[in-house]
Length: 364
Image (cartoon, rainbow, N blue to C red; front, top):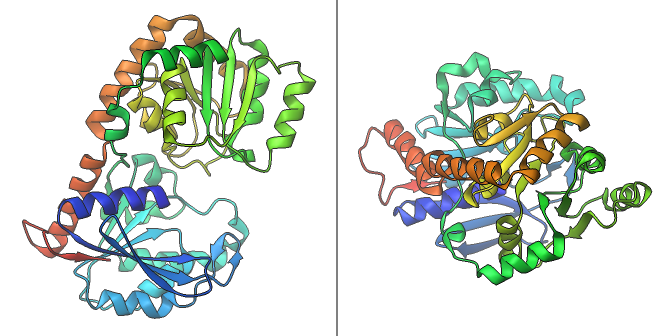
């Protein structure tokens, strides 16, 4: 969610839209920052309960700042912010980006669902990243007429930079012919199944990321004698190092096993780097990012055999991997750039305001 908000706001500022962001943070004092031309109001967080930041001051500041705004844009799920949104002036249009259903805290749904339904009813427009966000949601189908599909996007500039060939070659010599995974090492990412699949793959795997499963995965690698073929790098130092790994790998794998993975932004990084993708057939936006058998191979979640077959096909045929990667690169530029995401949002704002130009208007 944070990445989407940042990318959207930076793009809106570049289009001369006045943006203010209200969010929670860990400091003891409430502070305002100016980041990339965006005024950021950081509200003191008192703690975290069921993954929800406890930020009571949102209830005051959301309606207050809304008085100065032409449009209020809320990113869900965020129960406290949703409650605050119910106190917005009725004259101010409310746009909601619905990132995902609540997945881990399902026991709380009987208490949360009435609030969510009220704020969705209040919304003038609900934005989702894929059609699957509507189809598989427990609540969005009843608000389908308000929903608009706007795919998430990322900035293309980072992926247009040339990386020296000898650096790419050096990475290939270090890791061999390899598939790449990037993400947090948590259960729903399915890395344990990916490592199991590598027992049947004639090739290597590089895992970038950290998380609570790190030691468990290291033990799994050792127990299966994969130390020379599976490399857990932890967090990389900077974007340039990560970009190098994307350019050097043969394919990218997103083996997530639950709908906690609602979209898989990292797939866009792979496509922007001209890499074929192996992803899972979740009831979420994940399988709709690419095109099955054109840019991506889609396998069933947790199916080790299907994972190993898909990875093997790409590692053993550089021509196939390159062809799918090129198709993915085209699809990325057609649908998933920051520019396309921002321009689509501006059209939504303008339609709600009855205007043809949003320049100098305020969004919160």
